[in-house]
Amino acid sequence: MHFRRQLPTFTLSILIICLVAFNVNASSWGQRGGVIHSATDKYGGNWRKLSSTQEGSIEQLIEIVSTSKLGIQLIDKARLRAAKDRKRLEDVIDSGDASVTDTTLVRKFNPSSPESVRFETRSKVYIDKSHSTKNAVLDLIHELTHYIYKKPFNPYLSDFSISTFLSDTIQGKGGEVDAFLVECRIGREIYGLKSISPQCLNILNGEEFSRELALKEFYKLGVHYDQFKHAVNKLGISHEIVEHSSSEDSSLISSAWSKPYPVAVIEEFETIMTKVCQNDLKRMTYLKESQSRSIASTNKKVAQVESKFNARCRSYLD
Image (tube, rainbow, N blue to C red):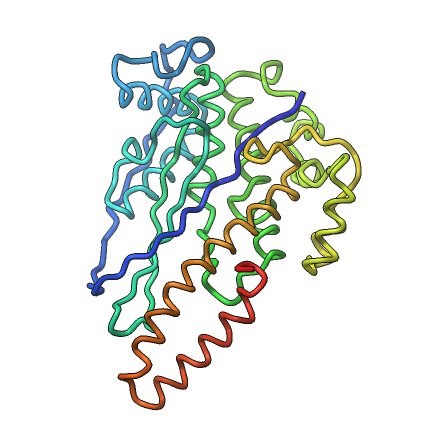
């Protein structure tokens, strides 16, 4: 049996606008005390039927997660995270075709000075609309871990590389390993050891879920091992990452790519970089248009930006 989970998605956008700086002060949330004992059926039926409205169903999922002590902590942290964006947690969660944490990176620049760039991110958690209540609860736990802890990456920065992307996505803070462990721990508190997934049982070491075993599980590549090794040599992926990989069959498969996570992450990286370079090509047009009306020092900066663009994006725009 394979455990299929979609990688967090990342949408790239460009806004050509005049920038306005502002500060947002996040409100604080108090501790909510003991475990909530939910009367909701936490197993069967489609989760969207927990209430007559979708918002009500989302509230019921949150209530079920809060029947766990660790779940209460997770929900409280998620509320704090949402409050930083002046949102309620319930407004951050929605139904979708797959369970995923979707982050949009918006790049802002003024056409009159396209060399000056600002970024902002927006995140949304989607829960598979076809899921049973139990699977929706487990997915919510998993996705909220990404939402709370995973720092959004910025592929426009020069230090964005396949090695850092692969490491951050799988074993980084708030990455797939962390989300899997939190899902297993809270899932056991809610549903009991006998009702958790075989994948969680695979990483159980005594009474604790093992991060080391989880990491090994994510880097089991099966028939994709040779493909991964080829990509390692081609892309120069760091040895520290490669040493985790093995040719054993894995039960952890990316639903988006139907492949083990390391292979899926590499393909996702190439998709992201293609989009980044297409967007950068648009910005280069504005830079060149501004070059003729700029002073010499600015023109020199434009030339430097163009040189870096060509070095980084040549292989993604062929």
